[in-house]
Amino acid sequence: MVLVARAADFAARRHVEQRRKGAAREPYVNHLIEVASLLAEATRGADPLLVAGYLHDTLEDTSATYEDLEIHFGPAVATLVAEVTDDKSLPKAERKARQIATASSKSERARLIKIADKTSNVWALASSPPDDWEMRRIVEYVEWAEKVVDKCRGLNAALEQAFDAAVTQARATLNS
Image (tube, rainbow, N blue to C red):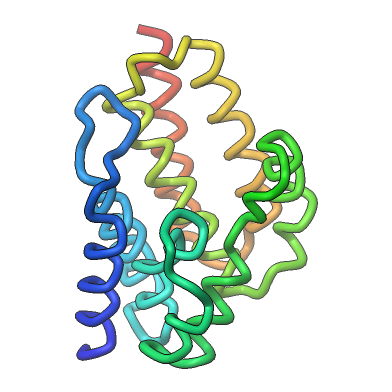
């Protein structure tokens, strides 16, 4: 529990200035908490997955380094976070294509994080889409998230059902 609390504190401090893109502009840390919660419920919180859930965007979106994570949370967590981190030096379209192409070859834990992350993002798009996103962009994101998650399925029925419910909610919202 100490490591989980430390991860939550570290993630909150590293993402302190960030907001979600949705119209509500909620604190980004809400996304991290939601991902960690989904993972905790899906796995009963039994391994470093929960810690990595809090930290999954830290390397990608903050100045934190792999070494920072290794020092504070150990090599297992740092390696898992690195495994789910996109290479920001690549163009966005290539990063998205790589997520689809590599999802099935990721570790089981990394695939669970991917499902939880996409679930949280799709829920956010359904409840508070960014003001500057046209409907087509939201639809394309949901379709892309489905392709990533499809490559991760077969690990945890509860997490997969949560993703499917988020997609259903997003589609209902988009069609209303």
